[in-house]
Image (cartoon, rainbow, N blue to C red; front, side, top):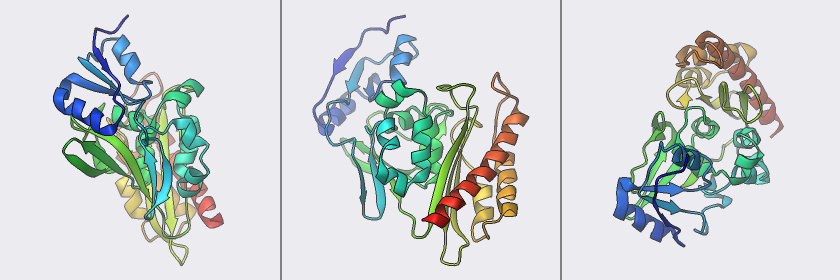
Length: 290
C-alpha cells in the first residue's frame, strides 16, 4: 500500500523545523530515521498533511559529556551509540541495549529520538532511559522544557510531546560513585520485538552499598515501566543475591504483561523476575570494576 499524499519539507535548521510544526500543529509529522514512521505511512495508520524531514539539521546527532551529564542528540543513530566508547563508559545500559535493537538496517538508519518519540511499549530505549534517570529535552518555537523519562511515556504510542515540539536531546546524569548497568532482552528471533526486556542501572556508595538502582521494563505494560517498588527496596541495601532476588519478585509483581503469541502473562512475569536478578548481578560486576 502507498501512503496518502503529503507535503514534504526538509528544513536546514532546528528553528525552521520548529516554525513548520508551530504552523501546522497536528497536521505535521516529524521524520527522523523513518524506521517507525515510514511503515505507518505505508499502512495508512498515519496520514500527515506535512512531513518534516529532520535529516538535514546539523548538530542533533552529537554525543558528549558536559556538566556532569552524558548528552546524546536525538538524531544519534543506534549503531553510533553501540560503537561509542563514551556511551560504554558513562552509560553501560545504553551501550548494552544499542546492539540489540532490531536488525542492522534499522540500527544504521534509526535514531534514538525517533524511537523514544514513537513510544512503542516494546521499544528498548524507553526502558534504558527510565533506568538511567534520563531527562528529555523538548523544544518548540516558544522555548525548551525538560521532562524526566519516567514522565515522558504516557501509554501506547503516547508521550508528553506536544504536536509543536521536537525531542532534541537526552541527558543522562553521570554517577557519583562506582556504577554499572546492562540491558537484557528476550526475543523470538534476531530483529523481533522484545518478548520481555529489562534495563538496569546500579550505583554504589563509598561503603559499597547501593546508592541508587534504576530498573526499566520493556513489553510488559502499556508503556515502558519503572519498577519503582524494586528500586525502593534496593536503595541503601547491601548488593546481595537475596536483595536482587527480592527486587526481581517486586518487579515481576508490579508489571502488567498480556498473554499473546510471544508467551503467557505468567511466563513474562517469570522472565522479568529472572532478568532483574541477572541484570543487577551483571551491573554489580561492572560497578566493582569501575
